[in-house]
Image (cartoon, rainbow, N blue to C red):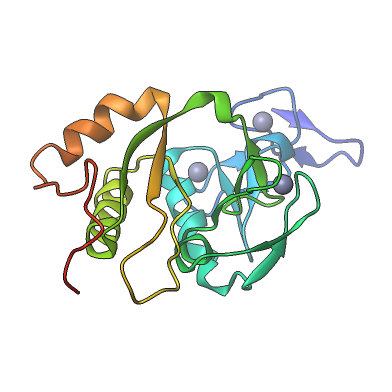
Length: 188
Ligand SMILES: [Zn+2]
Ligand SMILES: [Zn+2]
Ligand SMILES: [Zn+2]
């Protein structure tokens, strides 16, 4: 047991027994130091994947505005519907991937991301998104004009964390793809 300088029992970080805990993780109820916690809207969450899921659930990313400033380069970005919903942004100016699921937004090292597939079909894109979400795949969507009701003119490219590439392929393997080189003249 440890005591702080006021002589009170000091709660210590679950990961760092030598550090004073800043707060408790809302997900698992354990105490953690500042470094081990991510701040949600009201609560803190640890890095445990299950707790990170709760963090994401807490922050309603559909509330991301239509335009946002890139934390990487400062340019004003117009967000697609998907970007606003997922909080995962690709900046066309500095090519950074930014994850607004974290506070402050996390700038991702793009070297760790590889292209999984691309699609021009909005129905497929929505389906792929939900499959990747369910499989807890870390992905970004690059390009695509999601605001259009017409078939996309620019394909939406799915970029995944290279550590999860095989896992992502496995998840989508039974999905009947008309997306590997999709055609532009599909009916609505
Ligand atoms: Zn936790
Ligand atoms: Zn810690
Ligand atoms: Zn940027």
